Each structure stands twice: as structure tokens, then as C-alpha cells.
Length: 226
Ligand SMILES: [Zn+2]
Image 1 (cartoon, protein in one colour):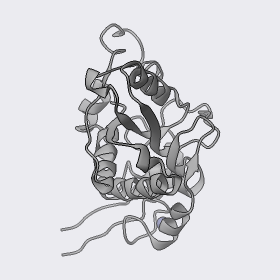
Image 2 (cartoon, protein in one colour):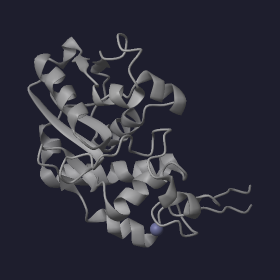
Image 3 (cartoon, rainbow, N blue to C red):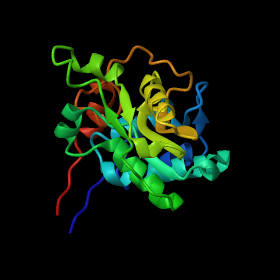
């Protein structure tokens, strides 16, 4: 069996994340000014890895990033103040295209590693009445309502890539409205200053490629031969 893979960070032939890229990610955890705990900043090599997930072994690398997020949560001590993990649900359209909800996948992995339950506590409320609005705009306007069983819980809410932080802010507000005792926000990657840098759609799990010129040449030749 011949198995050819390329690093999601630098495109080099080898494992899904080469040694150099692994090391570059390990020490790069951040907390944004708005309090989002992130495994990696959405810039530099870490950003390449996150964007590279579009092409590579997405689940393997996202498990690795979820592991880094767990380390980060333990470092900050936030995990001690959590008794349930949930996620900010992605839009129905995006979930249909992907076949799964990336934020849910990360939340499930994080919860398992922390030995905590994962529950679907949030439901989107911005989708039904906005059929005429463009996809990117809908995502920016994501709003949520939280399940009544949120009452009194210490919640960790997880998202994939955070740019403006608006989605997690809405999620946190909904959880608090439903009576959450505490809410911690976490993400796989976040822009260090909490601004979007003008990117319309970001993250590896969107079907719209944000910056094709950056990665197409390096990753276009990826293939598996079994
Ligand atoms: Zn690499």
C-alpha cells in the first residue's frame, strides 16, 4: 500500500502535520481581548494549518487542534469551572454541504478529553426568516436561543474559527439568558485582535475558499493511492 500525504501547514510531503508545524502550533495558544480561549492564533503558520484543513485529513488535524485547545483550557484553569460542553451550531446550509458540524466535532472531542458531557444547548434563531439574505451576512448575524436545561450549569461553548467574535458573543448571551451560572468561550483558532481583517468567509470548513492563491499550488497535488 502506497500512502502519500502532505502537511496541512506547509504542504511538505509526509504526515498530515509535520514536526516543524506541530512545534509551531504547540506554544501559540491565545486569549482574545473579548475572552475567547483559542488553541492557536488565526495567523502565520497556524492559519496555514487551519486553512489547509480544506485539503488534508480534516478529522485527524482537527482532533490535533482540539487536543491543543484542551491543553490551553487546562493551562488557563477554565476547565475547572465547567460541567458541560456545548457548541455554537453552524448554519443548516453549511452543515448540509459539509455533512457534519465542525464546531460540534471539536466540542465532542474537547468534552471527551476533559471527561465532561457534551450537550446540544444552543439552537439558531436567525435562519428561518432570512431566506433572502446572503450566506456571509447570515453567518455574521448568527443568533441563538439556549435550552432551559442550561439553567445553573457551568458551560464551555466551543466554536471553530473566530474572527469578529460576534457568534460566540451571541451564544454566550443566549446561555446567560437561559440561566447559565458561568460561560467560557473557546475556539480552535481566533484572530489575535478579534477583528476580521476584512475576510468575508474564513475557516477550513466553509466551501468558499477565502484565499485560493495561497494554497492551491502547494496542496493541489495531494493524492492518496491505496
Ligand atoms: Zn508542515
